[in-house]
Length: 289
Image 1: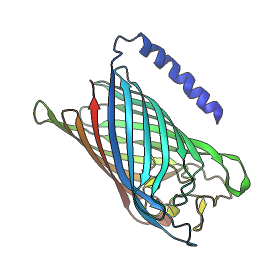
Image 2: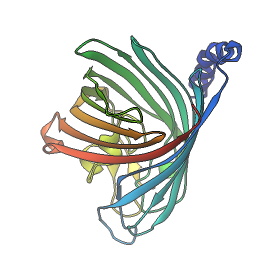
Image 3: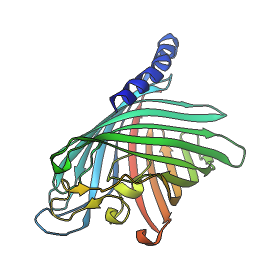
Image 4: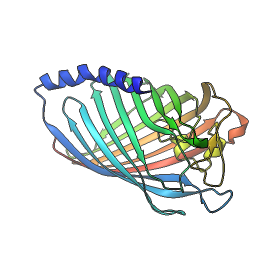
């Protein structure tokens, strides 16, 4: 998996070189936080399930060329072991014009020893997404690859998960005044992937924020100390996992933004149950252009 990181850096190198030649060298600084629900377990019980509010403050620096970096911390507000559970560091490139929108990023997850969390061997992510902007319907899609090392059963083996998402979207934009704007972007996506592990990948919120990830993840998550007892007897292949309806609102007043997001998922396969969903609320303030 180290070779994937090297390849990713090589892919980003031309982008960074172009950015150095650009006259648009001004930087913007954004601070904010994201709120959502995270499934947790009680390590003192043989089998338990629950959820806790996750609070994730972040700071993001980005140049006008589209290159930036984001650092984010994650806290549990309740549950059997409240407090810090993870930090993520994400260098990225983002580009948007009248015709396309493109995102490319690498993230590393520094996960703490918080035993209220489900165990995950996925500590790295490479994410890319592309949208072709149309007058009415905009086709969109991308690939989200997670990888790391599985340390269960006193072994150190490579682990990876992949999610491919394809769909359509449309953006409604309203300028309510010179300083106030509203954007509403409904999106319909098909998620195709492996779903082997509990993970914090950008495109698999249907795992990370589900009330019962045991019905989704294709490994066996044991109830007691489940952070360290995730096993699988085979590597599940890529499959059609679910159909996602996502609605994202973006309300801005000057440099201040509130962004609520809701997703509903219709899973394929009777073992995952019926339709389920999750929500997220983002609040941020941007300094600079």
